[in-house]
Length: 194
Image (cartoon, rainbow, N blue to C red; front, side):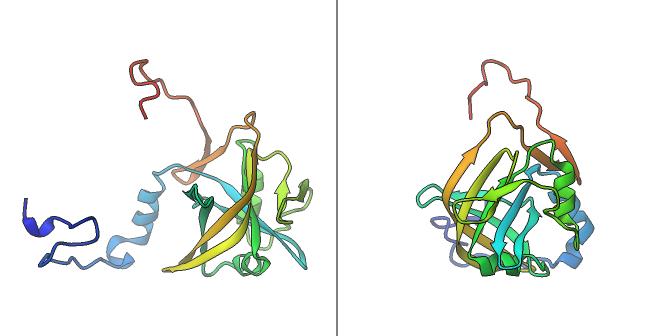
């Protein structure tokens, strides 16, 4: 192993290490980049907020937990989004974890110009943001921080309330399509090994 490849305290390259130039998306290929990242399965959530014009929301699959103390979650929003500025201005949002029966709801929220809330039952959550009826889980959040990240922003929310319905299986997105979870056959010697 070349000592120049080692890192000190995970803080960065060792003194005198060679620095690699990171290729831009043109060199990687945008289609290939999306295809490769699409191999990672994600859940599907709707991020919703209450505005003076009424409820607003968007479909997101870049949602994750960040911290237990304080309780923080994150999602990414495209800079080109017309919905994100309204959610940001609201200062609070709800993350609605969709169930496997909610494919059409997800598609509706992913389309521009659609009447996203037409016919959908919802109630105000702890922050006032819409919590949809029949979701697998929801988290009410106050906007905590926003960070620039290329053509997206990374949004951090501080969770103030949450709830789940264990009887609803979550919707999954993988390889450019929606799918359901299936239990994996795990040898009994490996069960619970994580």
